[in-house]
Amino acid sequence: MQIEQDRIASVIPVEIAKTLDGLFKERVQRSPQKEAYRYFHPISEQWSGYTWEQINQFVARWQAALVKESLVPGDRVAVMMRNCPEWVMFEQAALGLGLVVIPLYTDDRVENAAYIINDANVKLLLLENSHQWQQFLSIHNQIEGLQRIVMLRPFEPGSVDTCDNVRVVSARDWLPALAGEVKHVNNDPQALATIIYTSGTSGRPKGVMLSHHNILTNASSCLQVIPVFPSDLLLSFLPLSHTFERTAGYYVPMMAGATIAYARSIQQLQEDLLTIRPTLLISVPRIYERVYAGIRAKLADGPAFSRWLFNFAVDVGYSRFECQQGRGSWRLSHCLWPLLEKLVASKVINKLGGRLRFVMSGGAALSAEVSRIFIGLGLPILQGYGMTESSPVVCANRIKDNVPASVGLPIPGVEVKLGEDNALLIRGPNVMLGYWNNPEATKAIISPDGWLNSGDIASIDEQGHVTITGRLKEIIVLSTGEKVPPADMEAAIMRDPLFDQVMLIGEARSYLSVLIVLNPARQQDFIKQYGLDGSLDNEQQRQQVEEILLNKVAHQTSGFPGYAKIRRIAVISEPWSVENGLLTPTLKLKRTKVLEKYKAEVDKLYTGH
Image (cartoon, rainbow, N blue to C red; front, side):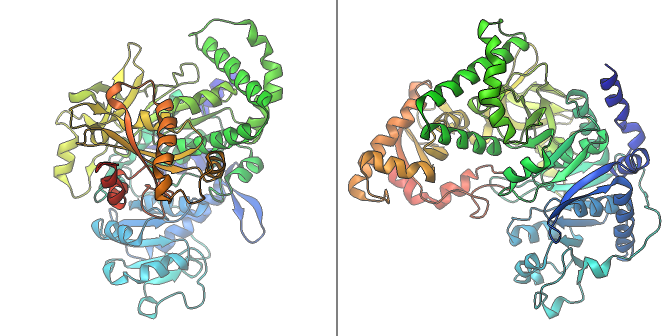
């Protein structure tokens, strides 16, 4: 009880913070000597940390440099860097001066970044290194509105074009050695704080305008349902340019007084988990799916007894969870949990650092199977739901009220209801100010009485738990008139470890087909098992491969209605990634782009065998 009271007392109220930089100011005053951020130093190759007071001193230097640029409150500045303490320093310095911060994805194409820079009339851009600027050089004449480009890392020889040596500067030269007090010029909570351009699965991105109050109230509501303690340590690896990480992985910990460690990269995430040993983790489903795929692969190659023991442990663990949630009865097998935890569960959890109290999942739908595995192993996954336009969190499961198939109850202060076609409508202090320079798009998504149309199809049970069942724009309407939400079927297909990526198609067609990327590790076993040639491109065996894979798909989707039967399949050799433009930076499938790229393969699926 005392621990919970101390937790609540450590949280900074919205009324005291008023603004996002006001939140930072209050945290510095309350916890000056507490570790705020931890990072990996590339030169010493050691993990180092900054206290809140040290961060505040850095913010003062960044702010003094920004002041020299003659920017005025309301001007837009952009940051295109991986997560690091300097990201926070730059943003807090800018917000304190009343500037509007625009985050850019580091792996986005420069053409997209240039569109955003011009659309928002960005005055200053912070880049991580000269390699990024090299990419911008090909279009530097398209971003002439930029007054200054600041490079965080030192220049590499020959990396800066002479035509831009006036605009481009190294942060080392740009930042003053000393500075005075940090300024906080804005005290209006409703002022514009940031414009976040939605990555979008099709079309040009739109700039979502969020106020200080939008984000602060959202962070505060999250802390009312998700217990974050000052002693907590989070490992941050989702890009800060994504609203989920920005609110839940940056402002929520700041409001609670927790510490954030910045992972080096997704590739080094496993190693960083073991080193940092976080107590909380925020992620998109793809990360949990990768961990699960690794578990499945190891089990598939191991003895049958190991598979049985693992499945038995998960069954018992999940049964305990249902009992603890008040939805199931106690069973004698629960007495075996201490042994099963030691033999099975702890070995998996220890690979995630061994200290996680719970993990959060958002950004996309988490499959019931993946959720069941982790919960069954004793690690609660709290799935939530949100969108950039709602700052972003709308709903979240709670530790003591966790319905894994749902995205939980609305967070405090947020209302939800179902509109036309069961679209989820949202209203609350977290709903955006509107789209930047796009009043028509704003009017189309927000009703006169403040309801935001999410575009997601949902159901709400008697207790108020929200379940997302599809997306209006992604619903496949067959030529027969039947409607098929693709997400559930795709998740079912991917339970077979042979399938790594899946996309259901069939819009305006008479039957469903599927594009599939095979798991590289399992593909070779598949080829050997059926005596196929190594490429899977042999036209003579195409029909044989299609028949085998269709049987596997049919097995995974047997529980779906008859009209949802998948008739054809195409194996795609190239994985879909952010780099080739087929996934958004938050790893969502760009369905329109996939259809465009594989138009020939899709046409073949509907022109007979």
